[in-house]
Image (tube, rainbow over all chains, first blue to last red; front, side):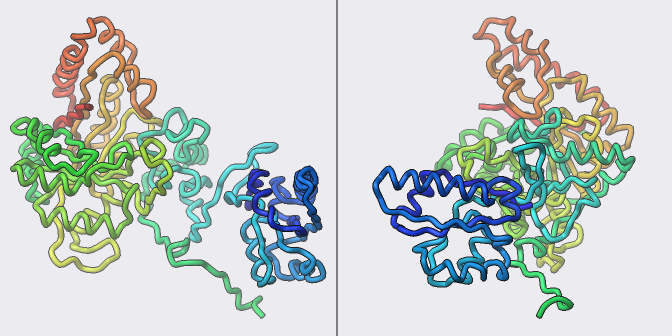
Length: 222
Length: 287
């Protein structure tokens, strides 16, 4: 999923301080799963903002809406009846959702309420970790199902570097050495000979190297 | 002989080669390079010139290499994949060779986290093994990494680093084999304090016959004090400093510790001279 973290409350107060009426938008997809911008977080942020401006004696109205998917024009269209009554939109979706709302409503200021972080997985309750860098040409088949691009601090395709210590990365003892994980997996799978196949220089065009990417499915595109 | 490199000639002749380091200054003063390099005149076969070592900004390796070359010494260009993409690396190799610099070392480089610009983005378009492969292709096939022909290919004698003490140990011979496969000519190792472990690694190298395909220069760094020894043990990732070594240096008065450190290095060198596959020494004297 795409993970996100809410921005500090002081930043959010600052960002909407010139507004009187805010449309606070949640999203029912990834940001709900990672507890950053779903219905519950929308309600919490809404209360916090209202309390703050009430204390300041400033008129402030919030309308809360959580869309099924904020990155999908079909659902963003549901905002049409509500958008005019707001000075600005504060979106708790990931960057994709924020941009879709901004694209649809050209004369409306749309502010991000979360920092979009990475594509990751849940490690345990309340902990998410980066897993995929979206390079566009998956190498997991060569690396025992552990991504060296997303999970090695130096994105080494032929690691580990000389800083791997007791399974941890030199950058931070909280980071697992991706190449230790890859080696452990290759051993468990009986595929250690795979390690000595040098992975050639990557063609980054499938990633960000050739500019912003697009997928066009002729069979589906209208 | 793959190149005109003096270092290659010495290694091919079977004599033990000695290399050392000159870290470029944190400023634009060329005399600082000259002062440091002058200390190595007549002592070494090549002078490694570090590339923004420990992720701190310094005078560029190539510029300092040129100054050292003009002094009549033999520089060895270090290049990290952290700061340059494949275009910048190749143009730097061409420039270096145009200035008569024909030795280089391909490294991934210390992470910016450890340096004075922790907010910097790392490049890592290539890793060190892919960088070795690229420079070998430039030399042996006369082709850029992208496949186009080079008008006057650079004939670099290509080195890389190896750290026999990093984890997982069982992988460290295989990682060297990958560098050999990519076309590396020589290896300079991490500082050796745990000689037993180094010997075990070398056994693995010799068992696979890798010592016949690559020249291995054993890394030596003199300890200046017990403080430095403890720091190296506890704070430097991938460093293996045995407790006996710390005890030994702690056992001499402070003013004699640097001398004791050099004595220990000489003992290590004498011992390593007898280890099969060791082709020379890389002395990294840390300021």
